[in-house]
Image (cartoon, rainbow, N blue to C red; front, side):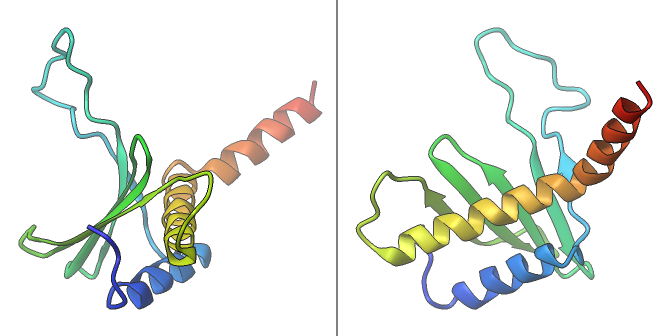
Length: 130
């Protein structure tokens, strides 16, 4: 589904709050628990999710061609799914802007969920002691 004008302010606000570190993104492993690996079937890749006061839920994931953002309500109903695909040359500047926003949300969510900055700082400190 292509992003339409109605989703643009929401995506921009989600990016803004992610940049400010105000969203609690978590890593979700979809194939954990009773699922066993099946030969020839690739497991679903992990994605990053956050909830807004139990009323709105977002999932950010990487796809083969780009990035995807999904919004669900408190009952798990999918409200929308937006995919931004990477291209060498974009015909429409809005497509490029969408791709960049979804990429940035994904990277910010990944860094927050995995505590990337803290782990890098720890590694630098460890290297300084060598």
